[in-house]
Length: 88
Length: 88
Image (cartoon, rainbow over all chains, first blue to last red; front, top):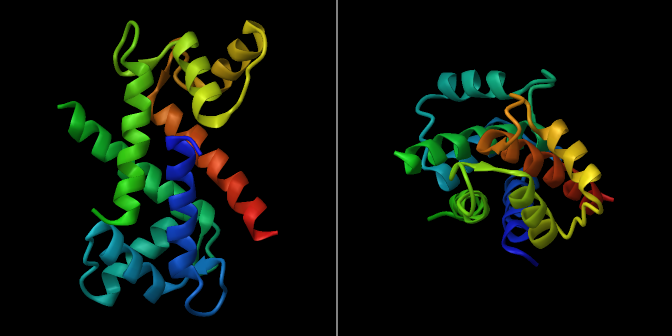
């Protein structure tokens, strides 16, 4: 596997290690999203209202959960912010 | 670093290891994109017309090069395709 393929495999593995815990195995519900943000991105969503706000922003198809595509969108945005930081 | 942060760092590192070779250090020109696709994703773009077509599709801001955001969009799309494959 190339470096980039390794990164892609990690993105997939991380998503499923959280989404597989409860309910729909291929979607993040509110508590799974909260755990992922806290553990993987050190984002402490604070009270549940903040997590709900974040979820609504990510949940493009408005089904109340975050699917893989919505998660990749988040990671892409976070990565762009990190990249801008490193270019300074 | 968490697993996800590691993946994000790899995405950034891979981009710059190709974009930094020629011209604008923060953008992929045609030959840098070709090298990245071939080495990292095993995509052999064939003749230069195919690479040019791919470049036009990725190059959202139409400046003739692929910036980090356009690259992340490509990686996100490729990762979604891989994820669907693994769910089957």
